[in-house]
Length: 217
Image (cartoon, rainbow, N blue to C red):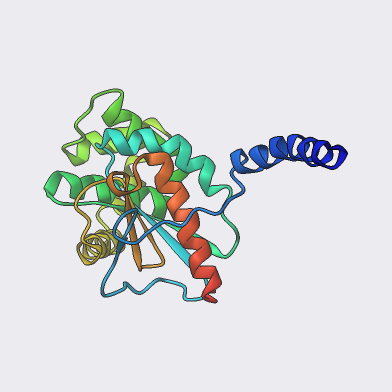
């Protein structure tokens, strides 16, 4: 009788701790190809083979991309030094090409941290179409960039080349919407497959670890 009481007491004491461990999120989640993310085939070459590359495909006029930005900004801070994050603006038409040029212009001028959120705000909050170079130039000059510097960068061969590369990358990855993420040129993540924008980042974390486990880098 005493032995049975002791076993019962032991179970009562240990079960709450087991439940806490299960609820704490420490258990590994295995995401499944085709169910939670898609394979990119053939794989796309990354800029630095010694790092795991994460690409975000986005468009400034996409409200879903705009809503993802705060979470994405916080998530990027958690990435290790062995991870490169790359923004890749989608450009499926002439208007989107202008917005893609705006992104790379801001990058070339070293004002991406300021202009990236400003361009999102202009299209999603201020409801500006940014359908002309003049409208985009006004966003830049409003944030301290001279008209001459903007024009030189916006119309440069380098910016045009980056826009073409981004378009080629999106086609190779078979991107059909925004936002989407691509990990190491091998895996594509959409909110539809992941289940939510928050889950997109969780799947990305899983795939980053998957690549690390393979020895890349």
